[in-house]
Amino acid sequence: MSSSLIFKSAIELAALIRNGKATSTAIVQEHIAHIKKHNPSLNAVILLLEEEALKEALSCDDEVKRGQFRGPLHGVPMTIKEQFWLKGFKSTLNSNRLKDWIAPEDALVVTRLKEAGAIILGKTNISKEMLDYQVDGDIYSTCVNPYNEAYSPGGSSGGSAVALATGMVPIELGGDLGGSVRIPPNFCGVYGLKTTENTIPSHGLIPKPKEAKGFLHDMAVVGPMARTPEDLELTWNILKGANKIDRRTPPIHWKIPGQKTISDYKVAWVHSWKDYETSEQTKQVIVKFIQLIKDQGVNTQQLIPKQNLHRRTLELHQRLSFMTIMQDLPWFVKPLMVKELKNGYLKGMENIPWKFKDTFSDYSQLIGLRMQIIKEWETYFKEFDLLVCPSGFGPAYKRCKIGTPITYEGKTIKYIDYVYPYNACFNASGHPTISIPLGLGKEGLPVGVQVLGSYWSEPDLLHFAKLVSNYTEGFVKHPSY
Image 1 (cartoon, helix red, strand yellow):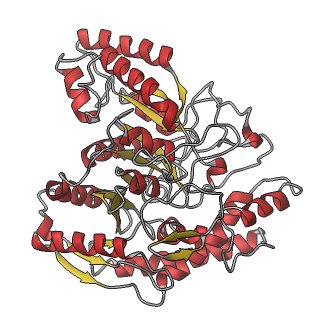
Image 2 (cartoon, helix red, strand yellow):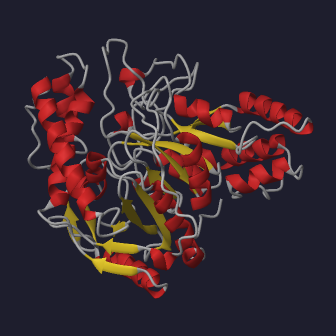
Image 3 (cartoon, helix red, strand yellow):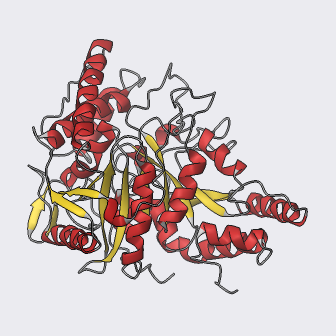
């Protein structure tokens, strides 16, 4: 079978279908065959809906013959991260705790994708309880990095990034509470957009335990992932916006960049944070990127936010995420969860409130602190449009026992400190960030940068990424699959 349709963007595939140059059925069949061929060694896709997808593709083809199109993704296949509700199918978070949980309906974002014409091919692999930067758990086989299978693909959306990097699908739907749509893209050489909090409905984001009385999604967001910034932008436009079922998502007046050129941007940058240095390779990647955009006329300045803002934001995430993770768990389960975290990916982390409190008073105090921190970040962005910063200490690390210290460039650091401090802070502040791939580093593993914007600046982030891609297009080398 020809592989002419593999590695094409979602926009290209949609155009082929719309113009009658390819059928949705042929496109879906080719992607299914590609998954079947390469997934056994990678374990990116954990649910393949072959029969259902082909049936939907036939319907899309019949509609094309009648001149009918559901939307901009008409007939285009994609996968979604395992956490999202898909009616009649399991969402387990790769954990025995939820091994029998079946979604009663589609997540709102899944509904929006389907209404736009997307065909859901299946679900992708995930870290257990979404609490690791490797992809392993109770139920699914370990997912590996396609550039070097001895390395982690990043978590928790590792399966999503692997599926994209290897051409299994053109776009993916991910979720992010501490870097999950940025770390896997950085480890696998694709794009990921962590959206401004409460701009995409979160109904159906994760399985809700039967005993749960309510469920807060503080700091957790839905975010698209793709191989091109144009696909990322298209998917974001489909996902965003208020919904009557989830009224926490307000209507936003998005600022459209219009004819803005790359030289119109004012960009601040840091290559490390106070208390959280980065590898020499990461510093070099960022400095090289800044020089590249500076050569195109971008006004750049190296400037770390004042008052140790990054560290305070990170500490807020540590405290608030505990409440999010522990909410509604039975009292006898909480100590077990604490023990698992303490001996797992949080091993060695300092200042963790292991004897945490989760009263309304404690929660309200954290929300008050959060509002102050958001205000400080927004003040920082009065001077700049964007901030370029690291996605982690270094590129993907070798798969290992969770909690094992990681050594890179001769320096050994705590497991949690390799990527967590560079990403989770922006979940705490709620700001949007985009992961931009910049090719392969010295080990043949992907490298990239993270770009942060003010609240509701996704149009600028996406526009900037598209402009930058004109100068970095030749950098990105996808693995041979």
